[in-house]
Amino acid sequence: MTDAPAGLAAIFAAFFWLGVTSFGGGTAAWLYRAIVQRRRWVDDQTYLAGVGLSRVMPGSAGVNLTVQVGQRLRGGWGALAAVVGLLSGPLFVVVGLAAGFARVAGSPVAHAFLDGVAGSAIGLTFATGLVLVPRGRSQVGQMLITIATVVAVGVLRWPMLPVILCLAPVGIGLALARRPGRG
Amino acid sequence: MPEDWRNLLALILVFGPLSLFSIGGGASLLAEIEHQSVAVHHWTTQREFADLFAISRAAPGPGTMLSTLIGWKVAGAGGAVTATVALYLPSSLLVFGVSRLWGRWRGSVWHGAIERGLEPIAAGLVLAGGLAVLQAAGGAAVWAAAAAATGVLLRWPRLNPLILFGASGAMFAAAALFGWR
Image 1 (tube, chains in turn red, yellow):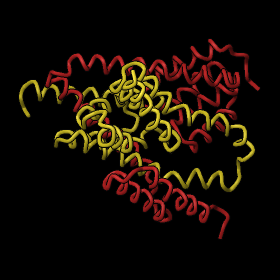
Image 2 (tube, each protein chain N blue to C red):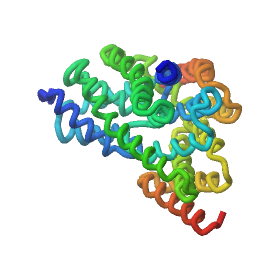
Image 3 (cartoon, rainbow over the protein chains, first blue to last red):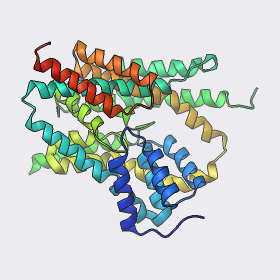
């Protein structure tokens, strides 16, 4: 156990800093450096178990991981301090940016700038999604599920929840059927 | 003010349930948030939605702060906090409750099957989200910028996206300034 006693204020401060410095959604990696390597509040194994769970559960992986580390350190209050710390910085920054933009929203140049940002941010979304797409001959079924999701939600604009509820059992069934060590 | 309370309640009713369906992170909710905020609740126009999306991606943070901005647009500071809490509280409580059980479950067949079974859906949702914002943002130039950025990021995955956002924004601003489009 490397768990050192950490107070609620220290937990809040550490995660606040993590929130405002983690750009581009790489919270898990930043968290590893700040919490595991530098402060040694949790050990590698706890961290890795947390990463696994944070990916399967709904919600932002970074927030989910933060909940678990906070919980590990100080129970429910620790989890609350960590999550509020993590989210409050970005909340102020993002609302500040939006308020700043609202002041210049009449300007066509400001709008054009934001169009440019939106375009490349959509590119980031596509690049992220494309890296995640299952590929390879053994993964045809998985790829079809991805395509079905894109068409249903992105093109036909069907509501997301029923689409997930229909496709999730298919995806999990496929994964069960192909698990290593079977036939 | 009943109107204000109604707005806050509507934010909770939209983002709360979505919280439990954001598989693979906030980006998977993009298409649904666009639909809810533009077509269903008329919280933003397509144009405003695209602007808020751009701003939310330029800010730091663990995931999407888009819900925060929509809340802010609908009901000011209280709306920003309400939408953020509504989006993150249900999923956080779920993780909090499940994390103890999860350790015992490790290595079981279902553990891996759920992890791998949801991956292709998550990938599809992220791509669908990109398409939804693209339709909202409109304009051939935005499509071109999105395509170019996709190519650049696939080629150089470790590039800091903020550099790309800034460069692309500056090019668009210059084009508007000199009346190229």
